Length: 120
Image 1 (cartoon, helix red, strand yellow):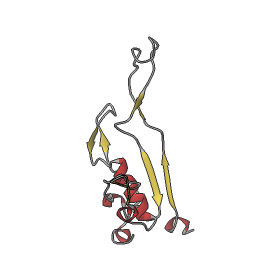
Image 2 (spheres, helix red, strand yellow):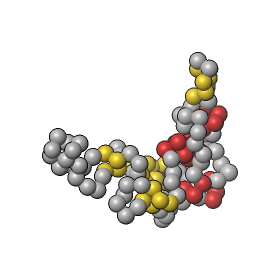
Image 3 (tube, one colour):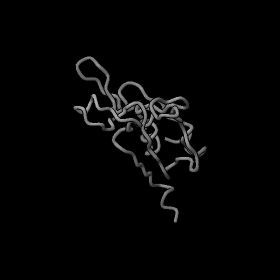
């Protein structure tokens, strides 16, 4: 009771999977391949607004057609829920800026409960 107020749960798979067999990739044997353009992840607790779906793919599950959340945005959002500003984690190495979200990423505010929009 109340555990999800302070706990962020994230579940995700490795990649999306193609919806068709691709024998030319698998040496003549039909098989499904990895598809890195779309994947599903669910988040619960820790500032995430429950009961919603953000993002949608085409009918084959091959491409994002609505509300894309880039992996850098997802990482920025997770760090925000943990109370960290991902832009403050930037360090310079060999003349280039680095951070967990590369030098991109924006908090995906559609995922957050209203109380967590300004927190972080």
